Image (cartoon, rainbow, N blue to C red; front, side, top):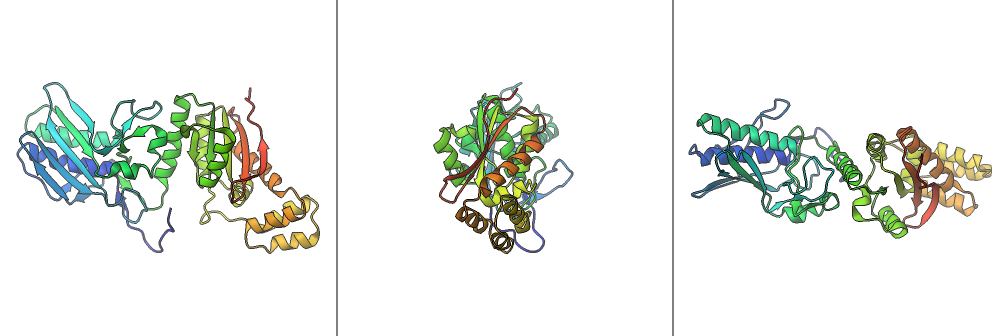
Length: 367
């Protein structure tokens, strides 16, 4: 995620909100009312944004409208994507049927809010779409028997930058959103992806998952255990978001893996490991060195250090097990969040080359 810009940030709109607005325009055109432009929809919390149409298409059997997603100042992978909705009349009594068009994924694994085989259009966007279709149908005295196909040109390539392949959502993006609003740098989508990853792991019966802070740590765990792709949880900086959800949705075994600096902060008790929201306390590290019997000169060097890796190098040079001490304390923080939840937790600290420099805990089954 990029650096957060200074000053007030502009909010944006979810793919779900864009899909609902595009659907409202398309169903209006299909029923002979033309394409409203801009088109206004009502979001779950009462907001009523207006969306400009970027595409209009009509043939004998369908109408298509498109909206370019504006994520505001959030570094969203789908910012600028074209969200298309094609609406067709359905058979009498069929109700509202959703289809995945090009660039929208299909669910293939249990554990998500949608059943396997369903297009990856999440529940709140489905509700927003249903509301606009039902209102248009009622205005014409019709039953809401329609087929709505959502497409995102180029969505399959964009989905490769998301969690969808790991979650078993194949062929493209998910149409997402719970409020319809993108709050810049709220990280809500990342944390939601962690939760869905846990849901899928639980539903598919995976006995062992790995939560990693980045690609280097993930590669280290892959070498150690050869876990399937769906077992990896892209924790990033959100240790709290992961552990609190696992407390309610446990897995048998969990490996936490990351770099020394990140896990120093976890050892200090921080659950958000982002540099903008938690800092390495060098006095704290110096105290750990003193507990390990370090000479006062080394303790003073640690207190005045610039980086956590610098302190680790000092400790390693003197043969002091600082990484192991940090790993034990970081694991203790994790166990404190999990409470009585029966999850066996192992914590690995890796260096920048992906070599394991410390290990704490065991993956033996509990209970």
